[in-house]
Image 1 (cartoon, one colour):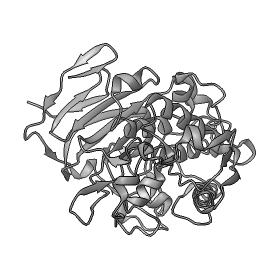
Image 2: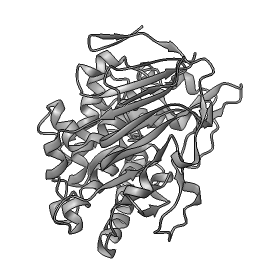
Image 3: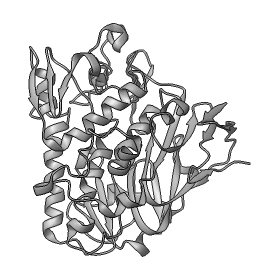
Image 4: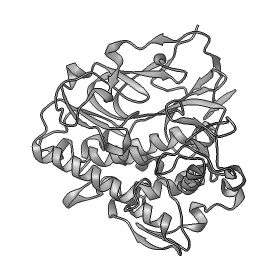
Length: 396
């Protein structure tokens, strides 16, 4: 039985009610070339969308962004300056936060024998602030220090997918791994560590990039009013359209099928599932990247989560640039810790982080801290959703 903020939602069994995802609900990022800036049919990692080509005929692809690729769908042509700024900022973002680069700030924190003081750009403040809140709301189950566990399990910078023999004996905070609240001292965007710390910002990182890029659109793109757009970072979506778009909830057991749909016109929608990123250790145990930071091991009782965060309407029309001369105006709001402020200014970051947090933490516990709607598919094929989730599962 799943309880969502006072409204009980009984799990339902998803028997054989899965449907093939129609081609008009698919987007296929693998078919987009680096230079493509045109209409296209594409697929993301977790979701599919329809009604896009009619509303947003222009598609800008950044196929190397964050390892999964990123798409910007717009109603009008973006000028060369905006496209170049987006591409440049994606590169800067990875140089700062990627744990797969030795030259990133995160990479240097991992290899610093005695720790040190590490200064991040001002735009990182909102990301760090949300991790503070997620760490507290999940009682430590969501923790960027989980990077060390991922490396031990084989999800390392070389993508070896070969777990160390003693991984389980050292994984997690319970075995002495560094934790965000105790072993990383934060002063704004300066992080201080006294030993090497392997950080991984994957729980919120793609969503935060989307929120920052959104600040370059709308007024920042030279239009008198915010343009319509969808930013798709491989399952992390920010939607700003006049008419709702339909999004398929991909079946984690078979990416060709859907287990439900949602309709979104304004706000963030994020999905999380181990279905596309999993491997086996030498003993044949199934591993994936969605860990409980407390024990450092993959969560095995949840198959997929979907989270919707709708910012207040006033926030949709007042967003300003998050890079360049007005860097972090939108996302650098961790000095105001109200849940509505977080939802207003970094909705995709919040939805991204919550989609991960739901693998370890009950929705009722999280809803005491953040405003959101969600749906959860468990490993045993039961499912539940919150009362105002903008869609539903296919059930008898």
